[in-house]
Image 1 (tube, rainbow, N blue to C red):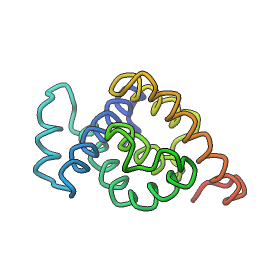
Image 2 (cartoon, rainbow, N blue to C red):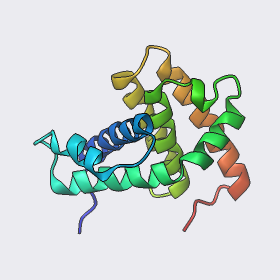
Image 3 (tube, rainbow, N blue to C red):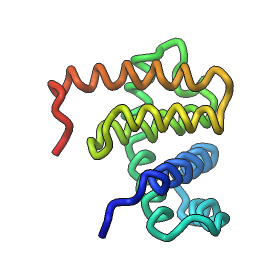
Image 4 (cartoon, one colour):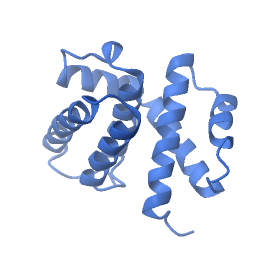
Length: 148
């Protein structure tokens, strides 16, 4: 199976962020809610839909660790005070940065683009600052070696 194109990966990230936002508001992961979000858009192919849902699931499962890490790096903006969209973008990007499958620059750039499209005017700078700090700390902890 070939790797998804950059535009399909971008669309998968959008879908993952939307599903994470919905699950966060609902307080639990719900496959039926995820199916409603992903099924609403006929422009999403099955591979992109599957990738987006896989990304959302992995980020949701790692949300407590991501939130703790982000709270440590941005104590003035703990996850409970962040806009829901920002929280979802940060959780998704934290998972993607630590999964090591996507170059960090792309992860951060894509997170900033999601913030520009879906969140507040201040969100892109906030997302950039938090993810930059997260990446620096992650590199120190792993000596710059992404997971295998």
